[in-house]
Amino acid sequence: MTPLAVSASTVSSALGCGLAAQRDALREGRSGLRRNDFGSAPWLGWVGRVDGVEAVTLPPALVDWDCRNNRLAWLGLQQDGFVDRVQAARERYGAHRVALLLGTSTASIGATEEAYCRLDADGRFPVDLRRPALHAPDSLSAFARAALALEGPSLTLSTACSSSAKVFASATRMLALGLADAVVVGGVDSLCDNVLFGFNALELISPAACRPFDAARDGISIGEAAGFALLERIDAAPHAPRLLGYGEASDAWHMSSPHPDGHGAELALEAALARGGLRASQVDYVNLHGTASRANDAMEAALVARRFPAGTRASSTKGCTGHTLGAAGIVEATIALQAIEHGFVPGNVGATTPDPACGAQFAWTCEERPVDVALSNSFGFGGNNACLVFGRAP
Image (cartoon, rainbow, N blue to C red; front, side):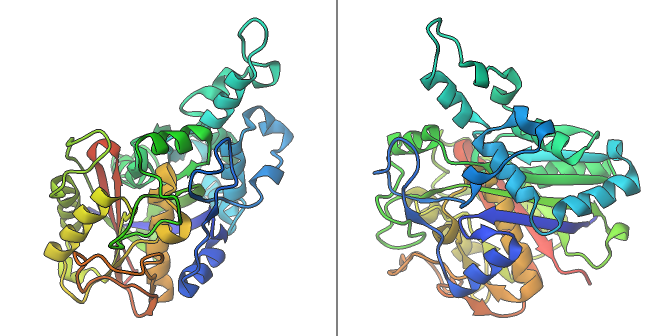
């Protein structure tokens, strides 16, 4: 594929708001996880909660979209001068030539939960939540489109935990077809009872902070996050880091577990490297999906061991952020981009006793070293696999 410029990006998670907060926490090996203090089930493990979401006030023109997920989206959009960069693209190309593709797994379902908890005597939603568009699956994209004053194509992708990685693939195709001149990509997912109870029902939530690739790992920690990036053709930002390739595949093995041999994940990896014209040995860092579930980590550790040389570095950062679900792809894409920009490999925070299946590739603590090519893995329920490859501008 023709590489694309990632001309702007931003992220807000349990590590803080903005890229600098994330970079500093990763370098220090600091986790943003805390004992669960959210929702109806505070006994359910630890969470990666974003501070300040409750205090966010949406502008009057956007108040009809008010809910936790859209507040988190608004908070994320205000970081790192991202809105200004989108405005510049809008002025350069025209609002109708800037597309928007966002990934989410729950959208504004937290508001829908609240509405059902407050049904009136006639069994209807309360008046303040009787806003049909708010409860639609595309609530996030509709809100962000209005917030950024965009008029180009707008899509919501919901493929569980690969959602905001797959938006990069869709954006690449959209630009190649000439349907847009720039694309805002990203994802937002926020904490809600549906997620906490749902993953608990699957027996996937750890009672303590998650420990990716630890020999005694016992489940995930749910997080929330908002992240965005602006993709343009290289001539618009020749010195920006680049999206070199993407790969997508579905193994369709099980509703909530990956294929134990990682067949779908490996197909996505192969496609991403092929599109980037790269060999596995040219990848300096792999940000692993690494949820700390028994099945996912075992599959991914085996994949790394058989596909990458010992000199490639690999780690999961979910011990810092928690599993941010539909936002995981964009969060970890920004981590891959920061590894390239700032020359470091994040450590695999949370693991104290490495799983023997993990090879020499694993970086257990932060390493300061040059990174020219970084790969990010995102594997969702149902075998929705996506891999992204980013590189430094020549």
